[in-house]
Image 1 (cartoon, rainbow, N blue to C red):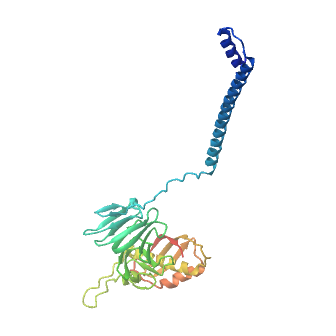
Image 2 (tube, rainbow, N blue to C red; image 1 turned 180 degrees about the horizontal axis):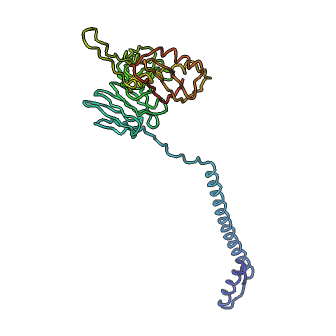
Length: 353
């Protein structure tokens, strides 16, 4: 490939073409030299301007690149748009029946003119009387209900573990160790009525202060720190009156017919009372380090002799001697109906301070 002619060579070629076609004349070499020099200077000036222009473009492009890179380094990174989290809307649930397992902490159960029945399948069920309000704070293996106002009646499927159903009425805590009870929350008091099993009452975050058995009624301050319990006499003594012989000597004497064993109701009531006492004694005589919680499981057997008197209470595995002595002394000497063979009742007791 041939190199392009420089500007000077091109100029000489143009001048040669001009003079070739011109008529012969006397040549003024001095003027011709001036013309050639002038044209050369003119072309050189143009060439320098083109070079400077191209260099300026290069410099401008480089400067722009530097500015771009500099701005890319120093420009702040785009910030993500703020995420606005809104609290889920509260649901107010009423009606004849509510699925308790579908409740969340933002749901409020409200009973207006008719009761609301809440069912936790295979676990528990509770009914809110008209005018009552409640929330489910926890749903699962344990159900915790915050009673805001009104009357709540609950039935709990018997479980091996204690306190599978808890009602919080302001600062008072009512935990189930049995199966059937009712809680009434007023502005300044909480009343508890136990129909079956054992219920523990006390302040939230503290050990229970009262244990109510079947038939007992209690009235407590909303703090759960003060209150009183009215014991059911039939449950406390677990006795039934036998038919006395006639005082009339002339009437024929009818012997008392004894059953083979005390009634199941009597045995169950005595067993529930013994379980309640065992829980209290365990909490008082087990020394724990701060922050440590112990739960013990034991099979309790309550025996009653033919005369209806308590024959003894045993635990397997055995409890500590001081706990066992506490249970025996607090139970006293309850007396059930006399029977031909006496009887016994067994149940699982979960002991927790």
